[in-house]
Length: 549
Image (cartoon, rainbow, N blue to C red):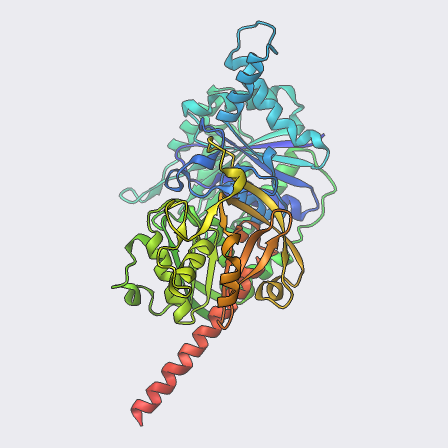
C-alpha cells in the first residue's frame, strides 16, 4: 500500500503548489522511492480541453490522450516519468461519474449527496494510483485555495482519508504566504494563521507548513508559526523566491523537507539523494557560454502560461547547449507586411506556436515567409506547421487562396483539411486526435538526423491535417513530408530543402521535454540558431572592418 501526501494552499492562489509538490517528489525519487503526483482541480469543466488559454494557461496532453492541467507538465519535467488520465481529476469529472451512476440506478434509490457519494468518488480517485502497486508515495495537489467553496468536497475527502488511514500513511503539506509589509519592514504571520485555522475548521490538520516568502524566516518567526499552527518548529519550511523553478528542489533539500516527510511517514532505510544530473543541468543553466534571441510568434503571448511547455523546453535545450535563450514574444495579430522587417529583425531563430482559430493567422504566415526567405532557423508546432504549409502553397506554388478549411472552407486549395474521422463529431471536449501516436521518419531527412531513429512516438492535439491530395506538388517544389503516421497515412513532419533549419511538426514535442531528456528538436533548433547568430556576428564584424578601411 502506498503512502499519501496531500498538498493544499492558503492565503492566495498561484503560490506554486505544483512546484512544491514536484520538488518534494523529486527529492523523494532521488532517494530511491517510486513517486507520482496527481492534481485535483475544483472547476466544473470535465477537463481543461475546452478552456481558452487565457483562462487556464496551456492544456497539457498525456500519452494516453488526457487533456490535463499544466501542472502535470511540471510533474513530468521534474520526475522524468509520464503521467496519465488518472493523474488529473476535476470536479466536473467527479460529478459526471456520480450522475451517470445515479442514472444507471447504482445507488439503489438513495438520495445522492455530496457526503458520502461525491466524497466517496473523490476518495476512490485519490486512492486509485496508490492501489496500483506501482508507487511507494502518491502526492496529491489540491487546486484552488482553502476556503474556496469549490474545494470544500476535496478538503472533506482528505479529512476522511486522514481519519481512515494510519497516521504514518497520510500527511498534509500546507503551502501558505508570509507577506512582507514594506511600511512596517516586517514579515506578517497572521494570514498563515488564519489559513491554517480555516483548514483545521474543516477537520484537516497540516503536518508541514511551507511558507512562501520574499525574505528569510528567522527562528522566532518559525516558532511563532509553529505555536499558532500546531506543528513542530522543524515542520515550518521556508520557501523563498528562486531565480528558476529548477532551484526549488535544492532549496527544499536545504530545508530538509524530504527528511521531515520521511520521518512522519515512518519510512526508514532511504538512500542519500542522487541529484548529480539535476545539479549538472543547473550548472549549465546558470553559466551559459552563448546567448541567442528566439522569436515566439503566437496569439496568446500576453499570458506566459499559454506556452508553458514550450518555454520550459527552451530552458532544457538551452542548458544542454550552454546557451542563454532570450525569448522575444511577438503577437501574430500585430504582424503585417509593412512592419514585418522591424518586428522580426535581429532574431536568430523563430518558433511559430500552436493554437486554434482565425485570429492572428495572417501574421503567422507572414512570419513563416520571413524565416523562409531570410534563411532564419524555423520551427513550427501544430498550427505553426500548418501555417508553413499554407505559406509555401501561396508563395512558392503560387496558390494565392491556399488555406486551411478551419479558417476558409471555400478555398480552392485546402492544403490543410479536417481529418476524416472529425467530420461527424459535434461535441468539442475530448474529441480531437489526442495522445501519443507513432511516426516513421524518412532516411536522410533532417528529422531522421535529429531523432537518430526510424520510428518515434509523439503527443498530438489537433483536428486538421495536411491534405494528401496536394502532397506531390509540395514534394516537387521542395517541401518534404519527412515524417508519416503509416496507420492513417498522415503527414506528421514537413521540412524544407536548401535551408539552414526549417521544420514543422503536427505533434507537440514540447510536452515530452524534461530536465534529464531535453527534446531533440528543440536542442537542434537552438544549435541552428546559435550557428545563425555566429554567422550574423561575423558578417557584422566583416562589414565594420570594410567601413573602417
